[in-house]
Length: 221
Ligand code: C5J
Image (cartoon, rainbow, N blue to C red; front, side):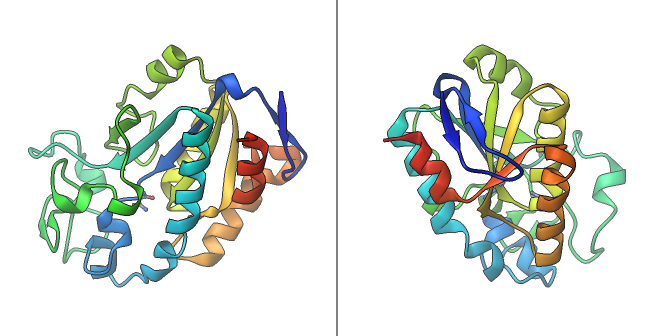
């Protein structure tokens, strides 16, 4: 067993059952000129965590631990994008519309791809998800069972939407989850701060939080 100094108390993990889950580090959310930027968001906030996410990836890769990357995206015919999702947001640019980096959040469009700096390596799992949470309409539960994963470190964007949704459901399913505080970000810094406080409040009601350096150090590679 190993231990990460964390909030609200130490996170003890078995390296044989730990995985890194990197949520939605996609061009359309992070790069200037993408979907997120075209909606008026300051993507520089999200760009700032790219080196930290890379440190986490490097740490898990060096330790030989499993890595799961997710991408929020939909089928080209939008059959997995309910109108309740598609019709909210800015009317000027919706999921499936022709955007600055191809059709917005459509599988295979350049904008839906993971940014090159964090590109998955062969053998790492890439999971396309139509929801905010990574369990909805995906094989994630089966993948975790098959790989014997019981504990997860979470990184990626955005903290209060896809990261938090996935972490909450993982917690409900019995997984122990830790969020890497400096490897996750929001377009709204106060939402990030609030999400992390919600996760760790009440004795870790959703899970734990720790900085990347502490996580990587505990991987002991
Ligand atoms: C959003 C996400 N915010 N990956 N997606 O729409 O959090």
